[in-house]
Image (cartoon, rainbow over all chains, first blue to last red; front, side, top):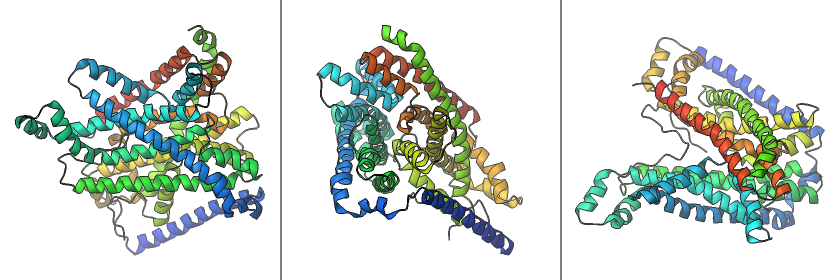
Length: 297
Length: 222
């Protein structure tokens, strides 16, 4: 029984009204589902023969799993490079030297503002003219993902270090540590715990953005689903789209669940004096708590 | 530099398409997001569940897939068309996909906004006898909107940048497509890329500053 403050615990009349509304909602949703079903049916999208390929093991081993590996390869490389980029530039923005801080800030703010697809296109066209001919789709995709998500992560790192209470660094300086030691031994270990949820949320964004590789013809899950499978099994576009959609959603939901779990853990944690950093673009939840937090799953 | 000047009219026309998509999507996604969030807090469990499922499914799907599906799946295979004219049809398919995608982020931002409204406000609304819809419309949502203007600005900036993915829906008119097309002609051109990036910044930065200013101005003082 979920309780919320937006409406009272229903009395007899409200219960009746709620039941009527529930019935109406069910009818409306069922009508919508039926409409979609009929539309799909008219175009023969429920025919067994276009769905059959997905029950055969070879479809999975030859198309879907290689596509998934392509996506995971781009996401994995992108994640590692973006984390490194984010750590370097996040710390550089906190530097005491202006000649490090300002260029780092410019780089981060610029790459955050560029539409990712434009950046990837540009890199995909730039690479052959600079490095000679070859297949640079993966490199362009990973470089684009690194520059954009790395810049967002740099902001997360900066916010994480700044969220550690000042007393921590003051105490560290007081016991005679130098700048590097304060950062390495005191600030970073606490900041990492605080920024873990935000980092994982950004990795979900990165994983979703690997699908942009489809546009520059990188052979990923989306490419197999929308180009290769419909070409091999004629007419299977909608089933393929649904199957790969479910795979993407499953992967992202698993990562999001990890982020939620990490956030709960870091809220309880006594290893850090800093509260969890809100994921970039997320909204801080104030003290009001007008509604019970619904699970994100 | 010569390339930039030579292709400037094409690029400007492409960029105008991005702006047009962004304007229409902003309106539709804000409306759809508000409806979505009222579903998610409503007293009717079925609507709550429908809202939650929609948000979690669409938010976790890559935008490229959403747009490619709206063109190749919904339009080509199922036969959903907005217009006989292919370019008009493509435009509305992009708007459909991008609005459906952006609305989930608008809805999530508003839901956190509702969480910032103090308990007493909702209790007082109930105490003076307002119904659920009345208290949502008159008390809760106005305060929730004011609390999340900044985050909504970030959502809108992300949406403006996402208009470049339009060519995944086979709508070959926006600036990303024009840039690719130009690069096919002339080879890579750094001035063209920088020109387009500056054009996008010229739109996104004011949106950021404006929503920042507005959120400070309209902040609910408690």
